[in-house]
Length: 248
Image (tube, one colour):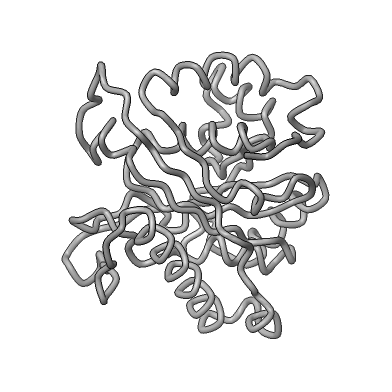
């Protein structure tokens, strides 16, 4: 666990009253065990890329990031910023708005430049949506996290989490009262030097995304204590639709 917090957590902000509600509320459902806390930068911008296997895990990810010492900020659909009350909360906490059709490198560059300029971190789900893998392994990744990291020359931190599905199964119902053990692991920043020469090329983004998904899968395999499948689940090959933000 981190021994010190960043200025963005120690200084009064809109996160304080939200944390006073969300942290204990999440604690009613999850006993969060954090590993690799030292891998999340204490200051400066970064992109955090977690796996996604439950509608509840954004709360766990947010609490883990807050406990380590940083303020959790997610990419959020631009339309949500126009919702009364919710929109004000999103703006007050510095969430990053993304237009529904934001698929261009130009949009990614603008978002990354703003993140880097503000010295803030942003959380981007590596798969873009809930995994469709029947055993909840990470499926084929989206390029959004990699594109943001390369566009702004930001540290890309892989993250694996497991146990949240016991609280709220994917597309299921909340199980309460139930307080489950949840493991969250922050990995070391990815080495992106091999992709820096052509950061906007589709082939480069695909290779970098595959490397990111491999790392997240390896971490999840370690947490679960079982080997991952030899091939990653690809929804387009199983007749399923997939949605997400900052898709390739």
